Image (tube, rainbow, N blue to C red; front, top):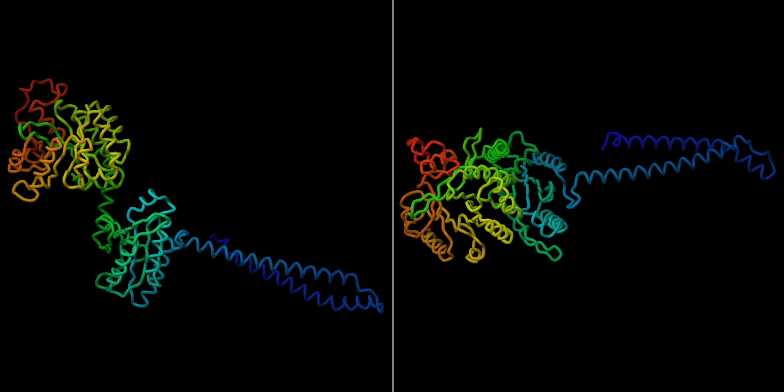
Length: 549
């Protein structure tokens, strides 16, 4: 609302006073003139006197017209003011509430939180700020449409209103994110926990929308304006409470969703580090700080080097060498994993092109990349651009990929295999692959997860699982790769199980492209075009080998 709009009620009131004054003056003048003109007019009509003064008669008629005009204008102004007030009230309501759920919105929630804090402080109470996010709500909109999603949001608000105390304030912050704020006795956060647990149970009940049954879960983050010892937290306002609850909500979603957490100071440090990583990843992609390392893959029976698996590493200027277990999940959430992976593959293809033609290159593919229906075409295009033979490439996909869209995955696997690319099922045994999927999907190889391989040092349930997986691979006529082979004891156990390809620290740690090139030069396994003009005999015999250092 502008300053001009705020002054309108005062201006209208001033005009009302002027109109009323004119009408009052006209009435007084009417009485004065009418006292003379009317008796003269009556006597004239009765024939007992002269006609009234024409000037006074005209003044009387003019007064009557002014009175009628003034009264009409006064009614119009009164109606205009009433309509303007109704419009202003409606505008204030629309500015303060969410039109779909009739909850408060984000802006009005800040003011409501401050007001509630002030009242709670006077009574010696604390307040809790609770932020709520619907888990996987986008899938509901995608599957059933936005009208169904809107109905679910309204139902959720109705359930929360029914459970919250009268003094609580409920808001829709945006999309599928909600918040409520309420007072509670200092030191009794358990009462808030009890309410949230009951809220989980209520929202978990199926929601019926027309002919559709929707099941929901929520993630919840909580914050309070008092410390655990009951003392007021310093420098806490509505904005701080909202920010802290948001950090606790992020932590709840990171821990697996469908749960709640109170804000802790460590969460702020974690989120700050997360933001640092996100900024670093964007900069790292631009500056090509992500580099491929290579882990040897060896035929156990012959001991011959048969290929390498490319492993991503981040050589950050600020953070040093960062493990993929840290940056890969974040890159996936940021939507940058495809760009990062393609950058690494381009470098790996260029490196592997200088290797002997018999050596293969294995590359891990993220489940996020397999959601792209054009993934196979994009990969084949990069192979052509790099002039790298598809038959030397082996992509590794995890079992989780099979459950998101198995039809799309089958199409892409078939397309890649038709061009000569080999496809392996990675980390087998840790997911939910069925024997039917292994039989129906055209995999070329199974990789046994390192958690089972490490148990081969001694007889255990896990070692029996490894034996079962190896037997399954033989039955399906699928070659096997064992990852995480770290010592000779495991290697000896694998030798007794048949022909297997192995990789792990027993053969050396992952190496850079330069170190791999040195290794292959020593073994005479560089492509002819990549061999230096100097004869192999003249190469130094004491080249450094990081794997054995």
